[in-house]
Image (cartoon, rainbow, N blue to C red; front, side, top):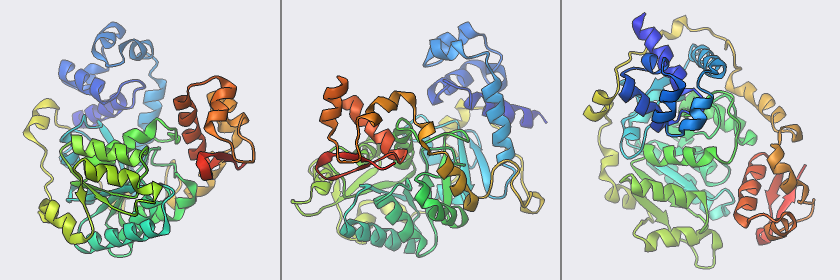
Length: 406
């Protein structure tokens, strides 16, 4: 029972608003356990938390964290659903190397895949047909060698990579920037169901988390960390894929890129990576030669540093036969799409995005026009456009313009 209560405390602390991974580890190190950390005063939190003042202001408002914890524990009772805590023996060791690891992961599907040497494949959401074919072919070839494929289930290259892996063994891992109970983009509902049944879905975000722009850099960081290597297939100069590649390099992972025509603007990011030292890849052999550890046996042991830093918490064993056949609080993945589509209506557009949305017509509109009209920095406009695009309100058009689609 002690383990159960400490595990409950760990989850609640991890899901407490404004307590990020760094703050979480600071609190565990200072107090020795999550249950002791939850007894801290607001003034202590202000000193120890990374975002001290904000965390302290909300510290005693525990309703959200308690509700999120109960929801997470109920969700975990479903078949093939796991909460992986940072101190669990089967927490993926790759996440402890090179970054501040999330204190909790939501995983649906085959947890064992997280311990196999894997390749992350990323690239443009608006990829050319040739790039989509290349992504599928490489994913299939790697999967045939027993190497899982990691990606973010976005449109374009991500989707193609997952599809390629599913053609062989289903050894693919989708890392989400939403709660694991919300499919994004909604048109990938069928793909999400396939991955849950044949591979694994991973999220560090609490249940119910919506797809907002700030979540996706964190998702990309996990994609980079989980893979032994990151392969970039078609990416523009300013793209999330290049950020993922840089993060992978900073973590000591191999970075590889596929070249294309010099006339292809979507490939300039790959060419930039190659100039900076990324491995130019033309075949499966290039990948295996650059990263021979991909064929090594997987390891599930936690590093010594991690085990001394965190208190061991044993996850309760679950027998599949004892699990309820029907979900307690969330529908199965094949029912998520109706709920997801309903959650992307105009009524859920953040108020801060409305001024930008109102300036976009049903004809292509350039971001510079919006910036001038609203007297906003161009960078802020592009951030808003990305979020509106992810919400399905607008779509990118030729010439860097955007058009309203609702």
